[in-house]
Amino acid sequence: MFPDVAELNGSSIMNKQRIAAERVDDSDEVSSIITDKMSSLSSDPGGSCPATGVTQGGPVNMSFHRAFARVVCNYNKSIEGSVPWYQVKREKSPFQQVWDEVFTPIWFKLVKGPYERWEYNALVARYRGMGIMADDAMNDKDMIVERALDIIPEDIRIQRYRRMMRGAVLAGRKLHLPLELQNYDPMVPYMAPYIEEAKFQMQEEQELLAYHPWDRRLYTAGVSGFGETSMHSTFLTM
Image (cartoon, rainbow, N blue to C red; front, side, top):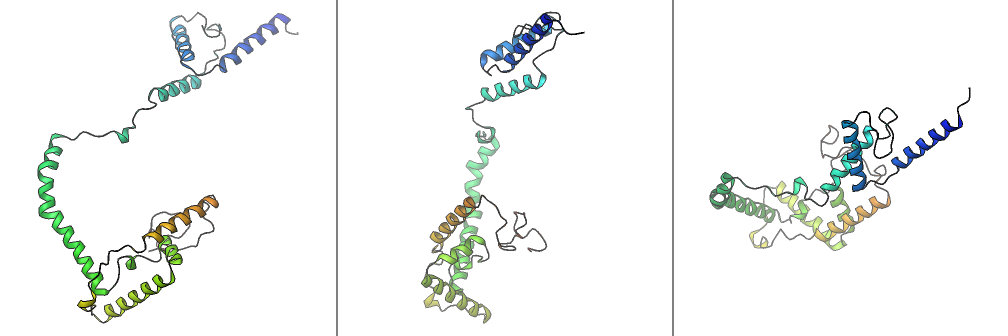
């Protein structure tokens, strides 16, 4: 009715062996032992496991998931320190080499370069005709630009406002700034230091708030604030 003492001792010893085998460190030596064990089990169906001494007919203490996990760990160790596939430099084909060395300079010299130069000069002429700066044309509804406009000095804010109002009046009257007043560079990024400071401030606030977005304003910067990351992607933010 009751189990024998020897049987209890044998089962406890077997349990201790199983627990000890499961707690063995995942090292190269253990990997070789597991390999020998699996090979011995496959070659000798009636033999015993070299790691624990448990016979084939008894409970196998090495499950499939543990063996698979060890294979994955060993594979990760084997590729540790290697260059990821997306950082491996791709070799150009002979056609790509000929295209880059022969046709690309001609394309840039005859087509792309002149077009980009004309486009840049046309944009500069447009800004000069309206009497504004390139940074004046930035979207003030963007969250970073909005924060930058809050921290710029008062004199810069007043100058920016006057330039934009003058440009609006000229555009409404189909006029342009007098030529003697157009001798300036509209591409000077006067807002750059304040935009960088706005980025740092917003990053610090996000870190302090643990990146929780629920205290942000809704429907600003082209997004609703309810989770989408693409600007003007919903019918409420178009």
